[in-house]
Image 1 (cartoon, rainbow, N blue to C red):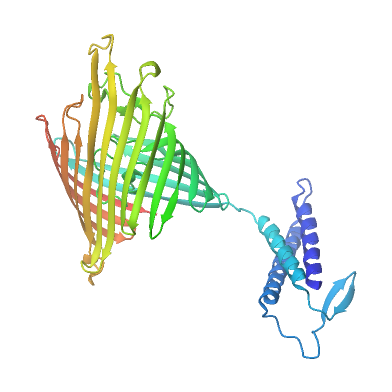
Image 2: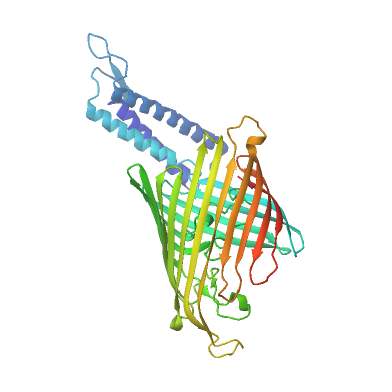
Length: 453
């Protein structure tokens, strides 16, 4: 029981020392602090030695005893040295191991700064020359703050700073606390990226997105980017495949009924974090992964929108297809992505009393759109320069002819990227724009440098 006595003695000494150190009204001199620190370090070393001894005894790797009998062991009790010739029984070994682990935990908890904190993010700077508009430079910076409060509790925050129209805009993209319920389920609450929108949640970051601008419909279009609510997400293994799932409840978007901007009437305002009409949205996303390179997903969100007494139903749906393969045959990385969105808002009477000079007007607001994108990077080519180039092509469109906007739009974008590092890329692209209803096309040349960190 010598080792056990030592552990108990160390635990008692540590407790008394911790109590003395925690007293807020006692002054501690530098000499006393250094002495306490030295004792603390000595306790750590003794604890590790005890732990090693326990593991040796448990694994049967301790030094063998001589043939004539067990080697004598000593322990100190009341300033007297006692010699013991018997080995500790298994129960005593387990008890000693438990005491050592308890002591280790208590010592660890005395370390300052047990919360783990990480700052990450991304930034970009770009140039755009679009036909019919003045060319301009732009820049943005997104800071991502991550806290690990313990092994199950986490907090994530993301702040976006973007220079636009001569001023800096600040947006709160994410502010979410997450709790790991088990290995297959996590609960989150706060403001988080829209789980049903694959591009927004996983691809919108400038150093991840393959082109300098975002596709139509899926970003700043028919689906919300961030929502305020609670979510439950996880993964279900199904043999060699797996199913990813997310379910959430959040503040519903607001229906735009004012004719201050006639083209926006009937659209959904996703910035309605205040939930001014008291509606809530229920939604989710499922993604099936039959092989590691492929994921097929479907997302939906349903809610009531508009004034409470005359609210109508809103249904948002999306499908996504994502395939990434490192091909030996093609000597490079193939990345194919596609997403399509349907937005439906039920019949609503706008300006029913004619007070805005446009009504009454009633219509069923349906919009849809999406994109298809393919990129290839020759990562297996021996040339160190060529292997860093990545050509990209994207087709995207937005159908909203029978809405107050009154036109459809489709684009083909051709891009070429050069990767300086795995998270730093220079992007150049030319965009061919086609608008219906006789509107002027807005072709564009774009450059962007994006960095992730």
